[in-house]
Length: 102
Image (cartoon, rainbow, N blue to C red; front, side):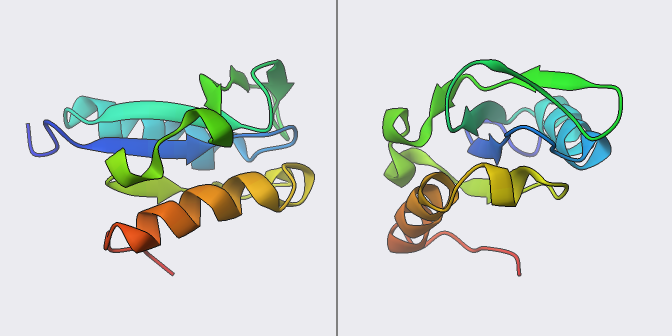
């Protein structure tokens, strides 16, 4: 598997775009990455359409220096998740020198 030993955070909050969350999660796992869902809390949330998800942890529970990447799905989640949790993970990944997409 090409991503064995890699750890990727996928952000999730109320109103996330179903496929923009679940497809990357499944593909990253298929390639061997450890995927951790990060949200403003760990309560179950609903997507824009029919699917739901639940964060494994919050940004405070993630050591961003251990992450190899962060996926930010679209939908309403970036606005509803608040500015602190995605920014905290992003800053940590940036400090660690990890390449980020735009």
